[in-house]
Length: 195
View 1 (cartoon, helix red, strand yellow):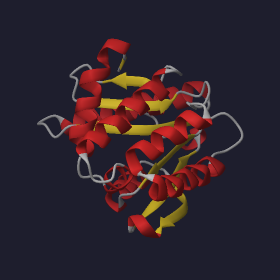
View 2: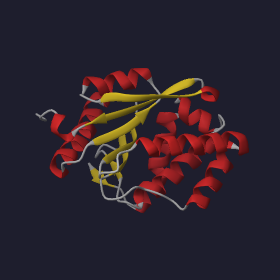
View 3: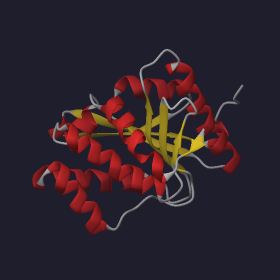
């Protein structure tokens, strides 16, 4: 995996917009508008970039945003609220702000690695690209002795993470979004050997 530079932002945002164009959580948050999906990933890039958490696969078909265990990517509350309201509107934005608070409350107080965005484009070597990214994250967690946390709205993605050892420790439902939100974790001691 390669560490992204600020100059990679444009192609990374386009890549993630293409990958997540049908994701229910992203669509809901972005009011079902592509231009808002672009804004979501521009904001996310800046947030994760600020903590050294934007990576991409050498083939440029896979991107990872994560908190690498240094500190949480956090914009100032007013800046974050202003952003959420600009892409989601007032009513939905306030609900999303509440969901984010719920998500952050489920995170541990001890240091951990949070996988925020994991996006692999649909191409011939998709499985290998995804496996390379997974191995990178697992190796980092084992070396740093930090547990992994993530959230997903998709049942099929939840099952994939469970296959690799994650446990779903909470399920959250946002009625307005009409889908669940799965909170997943994997203790670093339980990470399988890579090889």
